[in-house]
Image (cartoon, rainbow, N blue to C red; front, side, top):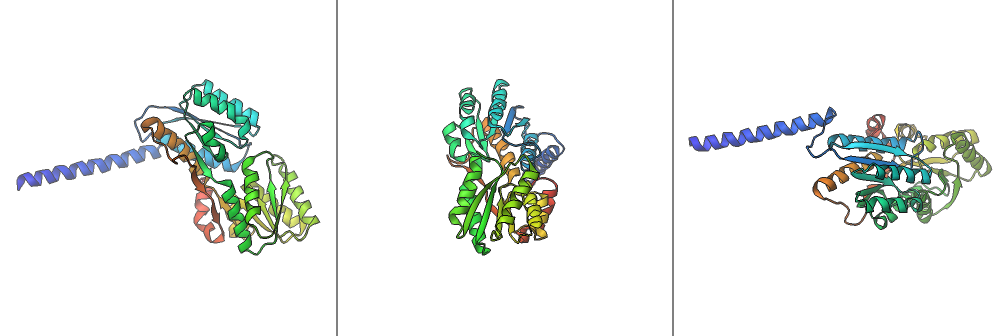
Amino acid sequence: MGAVLAVALAAAGCSSTGGKRAEERAAEAAEGRAAVNTPRWTFAMVTHSGDGDTFWDIVQKGAEQAAVKDNINFLYSHNDEANQQAQLVQTAIDKKVDGLIVSLAKPDAMKSVIAKAVKAGIPVVTVNSGSAESKEFGALTHIGQDEAIAGEAVGDELNERGRKKALCVLHEQGNVGHEQRCAGAKKTFDGTMQNLYVDGTNMPDVTASIEAKLQSDKSIDAVVTLGAPFADAAVQAKQTAGSKAEIDTFDLNAKVVTGLQTDKLGFAVDQQPYLQGYEAVDLLWLYRSNRNVLGGGLPVLTGPQVITKDDADALADHTKRGTR
């Protein structure tokens, strides 16, 4: 009986110690210390973000928090000009990073430099844009939403809301993902949909372009923007034009949630950018430490999720802290 009790106490002690260590590891990660003891690898993320894009701020935050947990030295750079983005990727290759995360908004400009990274033995994960090209370019996997499917979800939602004539606002010409979104929406939308190209680097121009279109065609009853910052511009354009069109958008931020809560926006399509950054770093760490690969040759989907007023309250705190 005494032996049994001793074994039981020993087992309990191991369990208690193990639980305590787990709690300690979580606390260390929360305080900015790694939760693992793997080597301090360097991962670089190079995206097609322009300056001040809140969407990519959220992606970066997710990546940085995963990097802390995984003991990763994380480097982030971005440029919305495809050739400049490719040069930033080359810089990362020259630094001999241990892993590379790249968005492929304009895949043709990125193909050769991604091939250089793969040839150099650098594991690559693509995020956000370029799911169709990711495997062909030699990436381990792609993390993001299927843009065509996301667009189709928008068309379906517009149908449910009884919309008849929609405007799809593209703020970055040449971005294959944006084209796929509008094409997908047009495919499932029972009404008519027209594309409007604007200069996304000039917000007053974006507002003016949407306003002019709404003034010239009062039958437009829905405007779909392809990024959260542009939803606010569309709301302003609607007010100035005296339009009754519903404003809807791709992506989420604090302003979009407020817009949903106050009925300034109808719905948003969330692709969970925090998850894209976090999982990209985590998957590279898993590959480096254990040769794990997710996706089975298919993209790892983070969306789409249609967000309405009913969902906004539950997400408000998360958007304020910059994780949704």
